[in-house]
Image 1 (tube, rainbow, N blue to C red):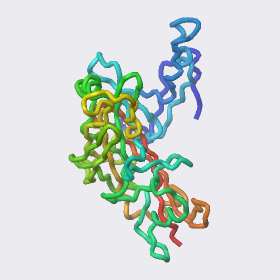
Image 2: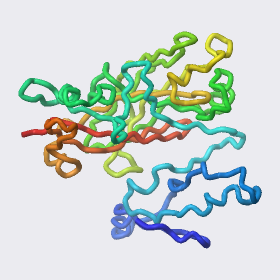
Image 3: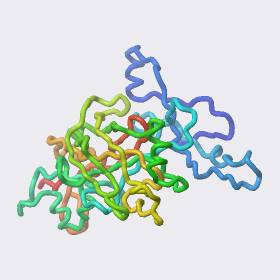
Image 4: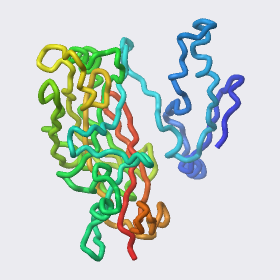
Length: 340
C-alpha cells in the first residue's frame, strides 16, 4: 500500500483486478461503468472558522493523501459516492448499527475488537454444551453473541436517518426530510461471504420500532427469510439478498407534543430524524471445515484466556438501503468450539 503524491493534479490512477486481468487475457475486457469513493477523506476537517477565510475552509481535505488503487476487488471502495436525482436535499441519511440495551434481543459488538460474535452451535463439548454456552462460561457477554440461524434470538439492528442534533427527531421532520423525498428504505440489500454463510434471516413486514410511551420504546421483530438471492457483482465470493425494512417510529414528539427532554436517543442510535430500520440474523454454512478455519481464520485459539479453545473466522457483511443508498459494514467473527 502507498500514497499518491497529490501536490499536483492527479489525472487517473487505475489498476486491473484479478477478474479484469483474466478478461483482458481472454480478449473480452471492456469498461462499462465506474464507481467513485472517498474512503480517505475525513469531512470533519472542513473548518468554517479558518482564520484565512472561506478559500481555506477545505484546505486540509484537499491536502489529504490519496491511496493508490488496489488490485483486490474487496478492498477497492468501502464507502462509494452516490448520486441522487433530487437537487434540493439539505441532509442525507446515514446507516448505523443500534446497540442500545432497551431490548435484550439487540446484539452488541464486543468492545475488545469491535466484532459481533456469530456462534456456530452445530457441535457440543463433552458436557453437551454448544459453542454459545461455552463462550458465556468463558467470559463472553451474552449481549455480544449472535446465535447463527436462530429466528427468535438476538438480532443485528440497523437504523437509518439524519444523524444531526440540529434537527429534532420529530415526525414532521421525518416526513419533510426523509419520507417525502424518497429517502426512507423499504428494503435493504445484504451482501455476505457465501463461503461462510448460507443466507440471511431478515425481519418480516410486521416488524416495528416505536415509542411505547413518552419514556420508552418497543421493538417487535419476527425473522423470516430473504429474497432475490444471487451472486454479487460487486464483491468476489459474496452473495447478495434483499430483506425488508420498516419505518422507524421513535420520535421526540410522541403523542403530538414535544417532550421537555429528549430521551429518544436512549433507544435510537440516530440523533436526528429517523427514517427506517431493519434487523437480521445470519445462517452459517454447515460445511465449514477445520481446514477452512485454518486457511481463513484461526484454530485452537484460547480466545477468552480460560484455556477453552475455539476456532474462528473474521468476515464482514454489508447492508445497503435500496432507497437511501446508505451503506454500513458490520464485522462478524464466526466462532466454533475447537475440534479436537
